Image 1 (cartoon, rainbow, N blue to C red):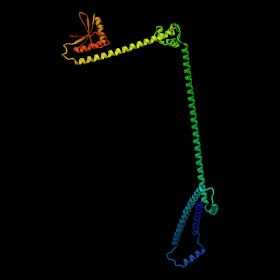
Image 2 (cartoon, rainbow, N blue to C red; image 1 turned 180 degrees about the vertical axis):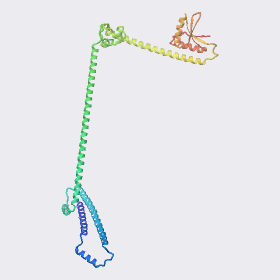
Image 3 (cartoon, one colour; image 1 turned 90 degrees about the vertical axis):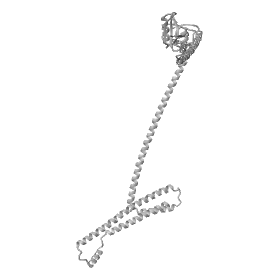
Image 4 (cartoon, rainbow, N blue to C red; image 1 turned 180 degrees about the horizontal axis):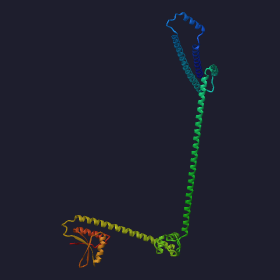
Length: 407
């Protein structure tokens, strides 16, 4: 029902506007028609009967006539202008009414139920609208043509836009397909490389396992002989290779032949391959010797540490003693005699050793031999500290130093 009311309202507006337009055009046409002859005769007779002013002449009449024609032309132009404006407004109103009717009709169709009860009223409304449309077809033909042309252009533009959108969508789909294909190709290449790498790793592991197995088999076959045997050196042989071949330490093989483990073997040289019992015996001896060497090394380290500690302590005492020396301790200087050599050559040799250790050394000949004296030190306390330092110094290796009065 809303659709029928809006349609009737729009059609009524179209009819009213058309009637008004027709009336205005008819009025304009009537004003443009010449006056009838009878009216003109009556007008002339009335003009002849009425007294005319004496001042009226032909020029004045022409001027008045021209003025009236201008006014009439102005009125006609104004009426035509108003008619055009009204026609334009009428066309705009018709277009808006048609657009609104179409929109409401489309909305009504979209929202209407499948079944409609007032079928007869709708059909009657359609008949009335059809009759009115037929009556106004001639008058609104131009408006309809314009609307159709506009709709055709809109449809064409919509079709072109739709075609462009379809083309863009096709291009986008093609790009997506290309990207998917490239990604799939990259994944397949990556998978192939991974499989190739895994296969190479598997082959390397298998080869390493086979090598270990072969070495284990060779080690199992190459046991030391039950009795000592002679072996002649061939090209490429060495102590390390032969020790691996006969499954024994290279130190044992070298010791059995009185050689160094790093000794080079000559081509054609004969060496002894010890038996398994000899290998065990030599291994025990080598272990014992290693333990002895380790024990000796530890003892030497402990002794060196002890000597270093003693030397450090003696040096500290000497430094402290030198600081505490006073003029009243004793007159003169004191020295530390470290040796009494038989001759000057022996004394010079001992002096050279003490000088290399960092001491000041002098020699003096006596009736019993040549003295080797370290010093001098100012004060007896400092000389005693120097004596303790010398006796504890492993570089000079002496324990017979004693203090004497220098002069």
